[in-house]
Length: 253
Ligand SMILES: [Zn+2]
Image 1 (cartoon, rainbow, N blue to C red):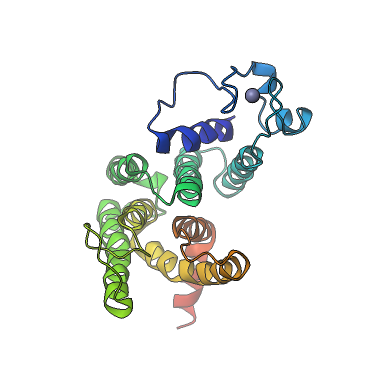
Image 2 (cartoon, protein in one colour):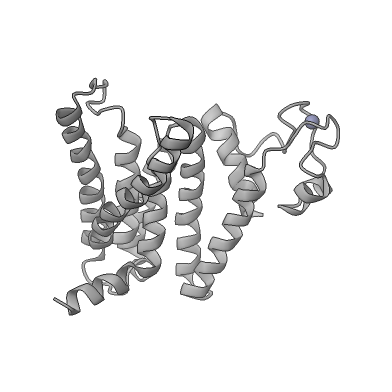
């Protein structure tokens, strides 16, 4: 059900529409969708991927987002149990799902979510640090450094890209391959994961990006590949396995 709500956000946020009203409708014939046709993933299968009224194809992205959300919530339960942290990470990863799919479709990263989440992440680290970190000490500093190092690292890569590839500098002072949205996204990831894991995330994302990016470039000959989904996937990996990986790395040094 939350995945279904995330679909609404993915569809409406970039179009500047309210995410609360009106109720779900078919984008083709504008017919309001009845509750029994709006059951996450199940309705898509029953309706064979077509609108009941106009038979227009329903994008397969919708059930994919719903199933992905369900899988991620199950993983969160597996890693965090039914705790306050569970809900915090559900919020964090839900935000990343919305950001990733909007970035994939529109090549933009909604500031409403990134800036809002930075504030929430910093607030949590101050008022309820155990929701984010295993140790309470210096939690706020950890989050704040995460914001600065996360955002700063991508910003520097953008500047470096400008120098190396001599791309046109946009009004924001960043090149075309790395928009300011990515800077805000990494700042958000840093606010929630802290400075150590955001560095790990910064190092993992390009590995994921280059593998998938190369495949996409060869297949579709597209040059612009949104980076948001890779940063999101890297931060999911860091959330679940990052601390273990860092611990193992420091132990073996
Ligand atoms: Zn329709």
